[in-house]
Length: 115
Length: 112
Image (cartoon, rainbow over all chains, first blue to last red):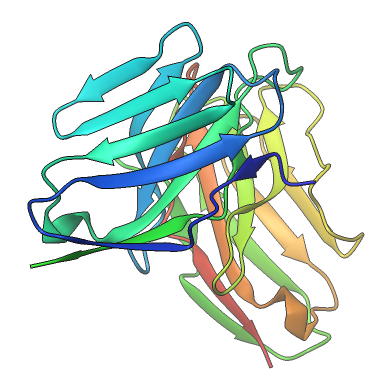
């Protein structure tokens, strides 16, 4: 049973427009969520996170929204730039897990931003 | 400062051989993780070390896989009697007191 799901394997947007990447989770014990970005031949890099006590966190062009009742989070990138083209992974962690800090990752969404 | 490093960057091995993959975490990071990413797939959790606690081995796919960590430093992931389905990129990550993980560049393993 996959606890973190990214149902869209790929997304293509035009430069300057908004990119919206979605993530759903099933485990109600998750209380901290992260987004990572991965370029080819590199390891993922941390992008932005959100605690379950918030419903929004913003960092420059990147905003993460959390809807706990729907067990859904999304990453908004605006305006999108060609350099944002990468694979984006959603991850979830639980403070109550005996292995707090261990994250469960989704399968990733490949974002392509066209010039 | 220095990030997470992994070696080798690429490894080609024959089916049935053993391989060792190495990870050097960021100094001071107490947690260390190993993941596997097969072509076109997501990150598959393998094993997690946190300080002196017993490692969480729940993600290891078979008893051919094992990992060790020396204190809060280097870790090695060993795959015995490699199979073609073991071909993947093996990623190591470390973290301190936050949930944010810092990843190495990965080791691309090809089993022929």
